[in-house]
Image (tube, rainbow, N blue to C red):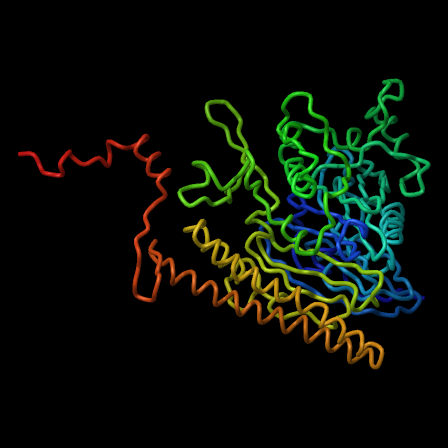
Length: 540
């Protein structure tokens, strides 16, 4: 039978979001059922990069024998194809109709292990797995079976994979040019614990006989073959050290984010930044921890909003924060002065974020109601998360339109970017206005959630199609109203803070000047430039 060409995947970032790869700047948190207040498995993902995402809904489909999925490159040229299964699941963004959700961060690792001839990049694997898997374990099997058969094209990758029962970290890297497959290890996060990864491999020792640790057969032997680990060294095999050997810069870039999540979730542990800052003989942070208290969805959203406030790394203070305490640092991350290398901090919240989500997968609810993506465009700190149920049949149009090279009020991404960028003009003032609206809307959504879901459950028992329509109307309607409210917020900010003033009332500008510490620094560094003669009288 001649294979039918069904449709083209360009991966997680195109299948689900319609964008290009930006995996090297991402952050992902995993929260197990026993660590969340309501028993949700929660996965977060901040997909960071300068690109315009487009949210997508892919409906479920049945496939005839011989149908294939074409795999094309960014140039549109056909690279290969893989057979379609008899049925594929519906997907909204990066959650499917069975509440399976996937996030990722890229750790790169040993660059010599990338196989440019591999058929499948990580983002394609994410999209395909969501269409084919009904559990997290099954998603791991789909991903690893596909790379074994068709080859893996990306560098090192960490995946967060959750379902209503379990949360897993899967870490994978290729075998080098011309070698099909990948070496990989997956570990289930113990119930009651949380984990986080941020662009550095996190799995260390590999308990080969543990049923909650899955791995490729050659995960150890390949490292020995390549000289990445010596069995006679007396040291245990550690996946992250073998395949992603750390550097000071890499640790600073990645582990500061891990530290900040752990210090906030478990303040009783008094986690030190010393390891992230390469000070002394500090131990690496554990793969997972038990939080001091169980985390709500709002708590996890807060963890995703972080510039190390209140710590020695606080990005809202110092000369680099400017007069109004902006935590944003323009790229590149590193620079050199007089032969000495420096780096900005890399926070969880970053202006380069394209989108982020905080997901819920809930075992006690039917799938269409139990799975939710709390989805936000642009910087996690200034975005507003809106709920998208996995049982919806379409996505809000403003989240699915637009381009990087043309501003449009019709694009949610541009609307949230407009507000975030305007805030840099007078950040310490404007961010308070943004957060007030953020708290109001997200707080209302969370209060409405139980009511919405009770209604959806009643409809689901009587008429599943009507329930799907209800959830779609709720998700799409609230998202579009949110974007309109954010347009109004942007216009308000531009008016209130026009030309550096603060308008207490329309037409009543107040000149607030600069903070005292900033003026004192100006005087120290350039005081003579601005100093007036004593007495304020011109001398003859």
